[in-house]
Image (cartoon, rainbow, N blue to C red; front, side, top):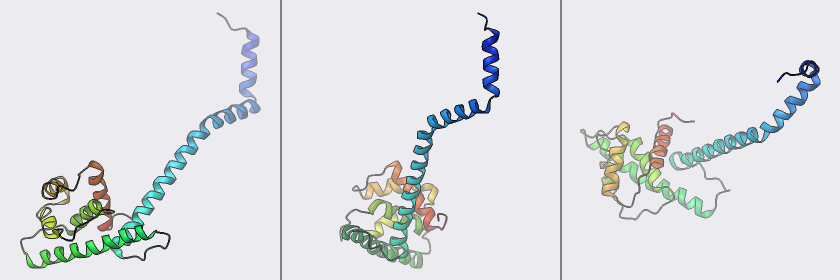
Length: 179
């Protein structure tokens, strides 16, 4: 099946014409534009979520003033977390000061506590000391072991892969590794 010389000449002429290239570029751009916009939207959403999460961490751990845009319920959740973290910090400081053999990574305990309790309910009889003991002597690389101990002593907590990943994010934040 041979291609006629007239068709070959027409193809060569079209390929060297700038107008043809512009039309081809416009068609390609038109076909790719929805995908490009989707990628840009997803990137923006991820960036916004990360920024919001960092703001929540600032509110809870650094005591930043709470935005008036939050509802009363959201402000109550942040206030509860601040209060609970204050009680947890008292136990952590007490363990660090009174127990020379204690090798407690306070930031690991705080990160896990935050991730497991944010937005939840915590009874007045919650045993902060037992919670801290789940992490005693363990490094962050042994987080899975600590979380297993937590789930054994506190069956109300459901450990998921997402929880462990978010604990890492909060831990990095507390260690100044996330901006």
